[in-house]
Image 1: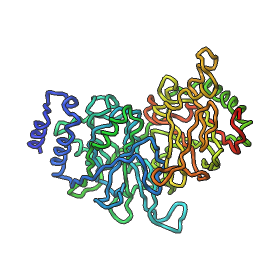
Image 2: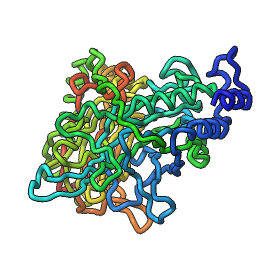
Image 3: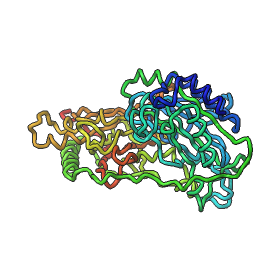
Image 4: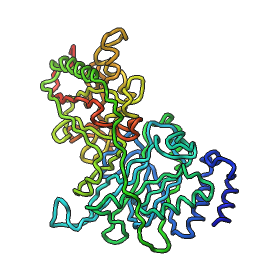
Length: 485
């Protein structure tokens, strides 16, 4: 292996006297893959599986997808017509992803999941057994603020359009072997990211890492959200610059478990200022006064918060819908967070723009609202923090920075959603009904309005729900007239 390592290092132009980060370029990904596979295959069976990107769901059930996110995931179907997004793993197996990281964008991250779990007795139906889809995160996400790449020896720096390796495994020796092989061919150890599957975290509900008839299945997601240059993003997706490899030791051995996984704690100790809550309530009161003559009924809704609770889904036996520890969601309107609308109904949402920008509070890297078709659990249309910026000023009729409300209202947002947007200064999100080729939410269908709060730049995980001001939402029915109509 040492002879091969020297040959590989010569092939890629790396020398011990040069910083490894500076020598590895994205265009050298094929050489990296070839050198890694040639070396690791001495001791591990290595199978490469296709990696695919999805920007639309195309399935009967979509796990709450964000329409503004492109998702990357492996395909274990072995060429079958229907993709298979999860596979079983033994306790000593590993997935290795060698990748050119995405171009500049607001957010990217890699998350491993348990997808299907076999229960000898369902937690909520003890008399029955079988597989259940869980789709629950198993570790914190390795995101653009934490990832090691060839762009810098410091994790989280220069993480766009660089090379990186991600190793997903529950076995310490397997990880050590992968690390050693990559380093032996000159790849920097600081660009190798470990995502350890938490065998040690499951004393009550142990992971079933085996290839038999009751083994769990696993998957992973690469999320890509809000690129700076859509054309650059489209080129990246078309090139698909990564290799996904499934490794199994050729010699069977017992598991050498990782240490128990610890998780990043949300929060930076800096809550949003209380004057924004006062301003939010003042704006809501102003708008409701305007709309009371326009709608027959207005009702404020609870805005429940949903966030990762480690292993709750697999323990209790319910679907987690591909939760991401880097964000939390709100579900704004209706009974059990679900509602339906007629053509002239509307929902008013008033809140704080939490994202990093000149109008935000800096508590989130991005923030958005999505209209979701509950039947398919598919996000249909989203508006993000950039679209929301300035909407409160428009809704309140503030056109001058000399207005005493300007300083606070520029950090707020206000918008409507409706099938038939009313003629008001408040910006409105028109709900698409869909057709044979485009998904939508037909009038009267059950829907949900999801708010996404993503990645506190200080804590490098989701914002703390104790530090952000949650939006208010109002369901308005039976439109009577438009203002001045």
